[in-house]
Amino acid sequence: MYRMIIVDDLPIIVQGLMDLFSSQEDLTLYPAYSGYEALEVLKREKIDIVLSDIKMPGMEGIELLHEVRKYWPACKVIFLTSYDDFHYVKSAISGGGSDYLLKTETSDAIQAAVHKAITELESEYEAKKRLHQAQMAKKQAIPLLQQQYLHGLMHRESRPSPEKLSEQLRHMDIPLSSDRPVLLLVGRIDSWGDKADAVDRKLMLYAVQNIAEEYLSSSTRLVSSVYEELNLFWLLQPQGEQPATGDVIAEEAVWSHTFTFCFAMLESIQRACRDILKLPVSFVMSETPLPWNQLADKFETMQTIFLTEPGAGTELRLTDVTAGKTEGTSDSDKSRLLSSKTKKIDLLRHYLENGAEGEFNQLYNEIMDTGGETYSGFMRLEMYHSLASVFLSYLNLHPTASAVFAQIDASRLTHVERSVTWEEMQQYFARLAALIFAYRAEKPMQNEHDVVSWMNDYIRKHLADDLSLTHLAEQAHLHPAYLSRLYKQITGISLTDMINHCRLEKAKELLKASHYKIYEIAGLVGYDSRLSFIRFFKTQMSMTPQDYRDL
Image (cartoon, rainbow, N blue to C red; front, side):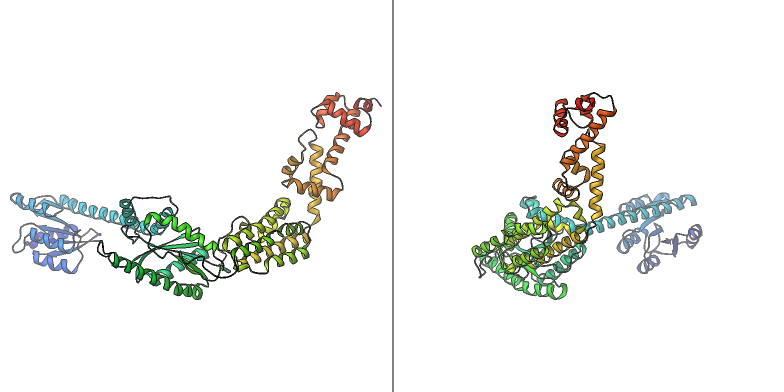
């Protein structure tokens, strides 16, 4: 619905135009008999179209046009004029009028002019709507764009010049200045607890970002991002204007205050994350501001600090200077202790393979029971991967046990979070071992017999084909070593003996009941060479194939 004022000092013209447009449902009409009356309407109503005489007593059309532009800049103004008012028309169009008509024009022409104005209003509305949608889409995409951009900076994928950096920060709505260095703050979730769902974790990371911003934004400008989907970092600059160029003392004081404030606030952020989100979070922060082109190197160093420091889950607050100065058992002593533990893992592999659950649990508890949380992240990862290899080896040898992994997050065997705690590791592998032992105890033997029956049938039907252990295992979708061991366990004979037996029986059948030549029979039972077949047959029967046929 659009609103239109009809303005003329002659009532008969106003009434005639009101009658002309009265049937147009998309127009609300307002009569005005002077520019002043029109102005009163403009003050209280949003007007979309003004259809006005250009020359009127008191306030003329050009003056009215200026008032219209003050109140409703997008309003379309159509002037009615006579032949001798051309100079007025010129002023009207240059002043922002939309169109003009001669008073002698037909009703159709006047309606067409108003319809044109409505069409222009519709087009402008659609253009604004598209612009608004584009702005909304950009606003929604900005967090993702920021994260991708910051990720590129931190991983040396992007190395913009200072001029380009300034442009990119502005384009990404990142509230930092390219002319100033930044403080780098890196955060790590020490333990996710029971928050295993990926969506829950993303929400928790978003909440940590919000908590940090709430505590830090009063004195800093900052931007944050997630990396490796599980950890975070922030770039920070002081609030307010940069001190005058050359005022080194003032600049150092500003940065010193900013670091002191932010580092002190980390304790409050940790407490809020612990109480509200039930998450322990650790931080490491650069003590001095960093030039933009040094961020990637420092970021890499600060990530490593988390792995070299013991005490995951203890809500660390470190700086890039103080890291590594924690007291306690020396790293060399811890390394020797860990080495003694990892050497026992091969014995765990043996117990798992042979179903010795009691022995496995006793040794596993011995390996995992002491000192776990005093190890650095690198040491914990070494132990994690050593244990994971035990279970991956078991799965490779026993593919039918893959059903076990439907009950547990099997992806953790090949992908481990850097922040994994000793307790999480201990619980995960203990649970996995328990599932495997339960599977071994409960798996139906009928399934294994089915495999053997299928294998015997396959061998008999494919005597002329490749019957190597590797090929047979591929057909059965089993590991070769597992297939060989399973077959011998169920039948009491090896696969090789079974294949030789089937080839001999088929050869004897063909020698007695067919007219195939010896070399043809050799090919039918899987021998490329006639002589190889004769040697095999003579070894098995103590006579040649021809002697057997002649009996």
